[in-house]
Length: 279
Image 1 (cartoon, one colour):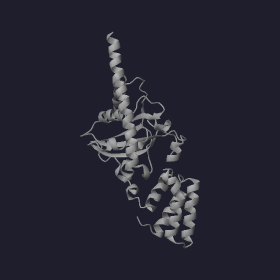
Image 2 (spheres, rainbow, N blue to C red):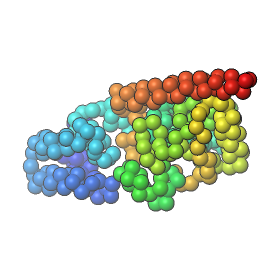
Image 3 (cartoon, rainbow, N blue to C red):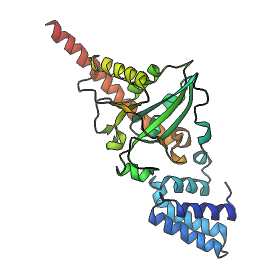
Image 4 (cartoon, helix red, strand yellow):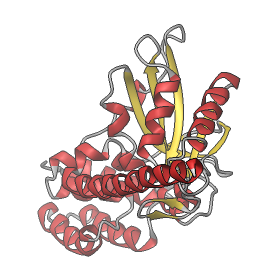
């Protein structure tokens, strides 16, 4: 993607004003902006800025909006796709509904829902906290009380809320009170956010059924609580499975392996329990 001077200056200006931009990033962006305003060569300044940001980019440690700009500078076109936030909305309540689930990093919570027939849109975001407009760094730092979550808009003529809850429990470890899989911290807690009594009853029934299934050695700790304001995550995080396919596949494989062995242990535990009961 070829960046022109006007577009670059506008992006640098917005990034320096962005409260989510870290101070070190801001200093590098501000230097590049000043040089361009002084008439310096665009290509040379972008090359210098790319070199400055590269160490953090290689460690996937740039803030989301800066990471998007870095991907544009390096022509990583797959990772620069923009999510159309305006399309994530309930249009007709007669056949559309929404659901919110938190189950670890939201990167891995999108594809399993999105690929099901009847899903209209899946949005990554933050919810359950006490601060407006939280940033990724703030949520990861556990300063806001938010968890990473996905908001799903679905077609009730094709899917029911119960189907989504059942799928959710297949994707998560409902016994982990301290995160999910390799994701540790309160921002990765297992929570089902319900919007009304009907959703609450369905979620409670599914949890009760799981608790009495004998599949798990440890208690089911997934929390069921009322919905709160859902804040969309930065564009960088939307549909991560499409933008960063290799990285996503590694994370997905790790989660699947954990769940496979957990379910295998559950089957063994269930058989032992039944055998002991027969005795």
